[in-house]
Amino acid sequence: MVALEQLSFPVPWTRPLFVTEIDAIGRFNLVATTANGKLVAYIFSMYFLDEMHVNKIAVDPSWRRQRVAILLMDEVFAFARLNGIASVSLEVRESNEAARKLYGALEFEERYRRPRYYPDGESAIVMTCSIAPAPGIA
Ligand SMILES: CC(C)(COP(=O)(O)OP(=O)(O)OC[C@H]1O[C@@H](n2cnc3c(N)ncnc32)[C@H](O)[C@@H]1OP(=O)(O)O)[C@@H](O)C(=O)NCCC(=O)NCCS
Image (cartoon, rainbow, N blue to C red; front, side, top):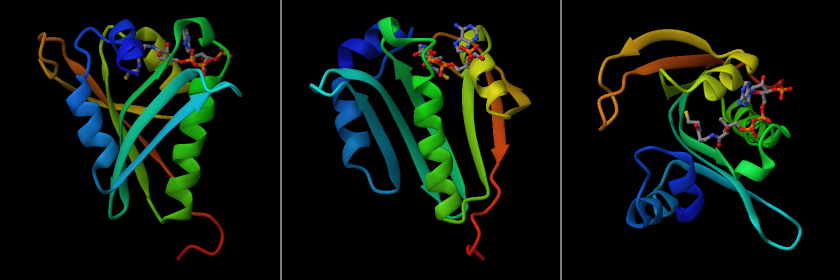
């Protein structure tokens, strides 16, 4: 996971940060693997009351553009619907066109810009997506 992280992000999470996030409460974290256990992708998210936030998602470069990210995001949406969560938010680097397209395809809307959000000074775009409750969820 740490190796894929380093390939995928300009300011990668460290191993201790992964350990903290894996153990933390109020998290919905998933990996996608092959049948023989090779890591293909991961998603880290957290929830509180009726809100959910995607902290990060990464797909192994050799598996990109095969809808693995969509698969993991769909799991987040299913969890949200089943738990009465009304909206999912995330930040994305301004320069990250692949991710902005992915979230746009999932009907996230770009809400506002957070200047110099990332440690290297790049700004973030804050995006949100409304969740329709599952039938039976008040
Ligand atoms: C962004 C990322 C998670 C996308 O993962 P993926 O599994 O390749 O995405 P999917 O195959 O599920 O793509 C779904 C849709 O998103 C859009 N999309 C994804 N990658 C794209 C790219 N490089 N260029 C343009 N559109 C892209 C397309 O609409 C795509 O549908 P299509 O292939 O039918 O056109 C992956 O590129 C990645 O791990 N990047 C590095 C880490 C990162 O930037 N994470 C996001 C941080 S906010």
